[in-house]
Image (cartoon, rainbow, N blue to C red; front, side, top):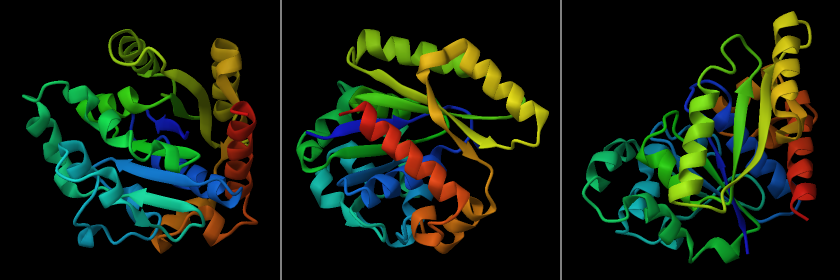
Length: 254
């Protein structure tokens, strides 16, 4: 039975998609069977694994609407052992379309019951908001990874996200766990980066992953080639960081 992990933070630009794509690819290289679900209308996680977003006919939009099954939406990615349920710009409309549906927060959870046992890990890239899409992902998830950038406003809005997770635990998904907080975009030369790491570790201690994702040029280049950092440059610092994160998650879930 696979573990479903949502990558969530309502702040944009914190490394959610980078983490979703590269964690999925790293788990795949470590011989785990992975499904990456793109639940962000920007569809960057889909294109980041070589999917032509404009050619997508069935994706997370249809899965959430229940007009297609999750199995019908699965595509093979260019990363070993990683399948993708891609997103499309149509996903923007889903919040309006689901608003009158009964149990609208459970649409994704219900859709994934048929594929959960086919994978070791299901990774969901969430939209940068706390709307119905992210709520669906958190309701369907077993746990959540929260990327936190090592910059000035890092902790801003974190309380709001943690409150959302608490209310999801209370109302929709009492089994939802925090897999961990992931420090991203770390630059050891900057005093501020080091201060943010200290603050987060001091406040959240055991909830913070040991692995820290460092700023890395190769990590920024990889998406423009439609590849994960593992495919693009496995010897880079970014690849080493994400492989370490994958190993940490596997060890935690033994």
